[in-house]
Image (cartoon, rainbow, N blue to C red; front, side):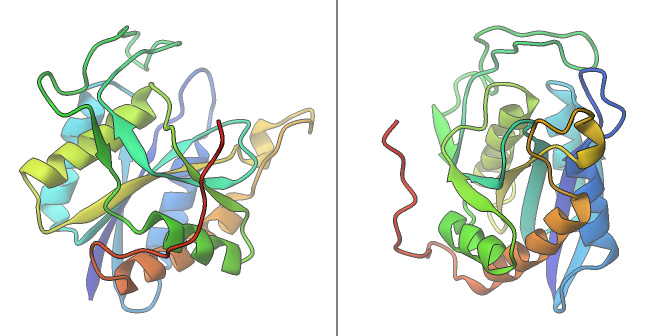
Length: 216
């Protein structure tokens, strides 16, 4: 059985829900066949979020780590290719901290690429009927902080694990005027189950050789 750790965030910026945690909870409640899944809610806080992630990876001894975050305004589930070593917060985190141009890990590499097969993951989401794309930026808020932090943890403490970050759109209940894109957390969870199966079945270091690039 492949051991999966799936994380989502607590609500932030005045929201009462976070669809990343809603989707993570649903996947853990009904994981795909052949996988066991544990869901952990991370605080939307610089520093503490990666500390909680480290503890969760250690406690679960996870083979696959899938960290989720909210990307309000995006119309699709987006699989992040890379996390970068900078915190540059447009808004404060849930403790009021707002770092500007600070490294996630002082002295760490400029970036960490996801060790999940990002293109195979996108293909699996689409095959499950869920809109999906590769993303080349996880932002510079706590989501990127965790995306980079996960890469650093895998590189330095948990080399047996593979992992990456995925952004999910707003839930419909967050879009009161109906003018922004949204996806039901249950729909997101359905796609994430397919993603996890694809990730578990794809050998480390392999991915689909298809274009998912961008011109800008």
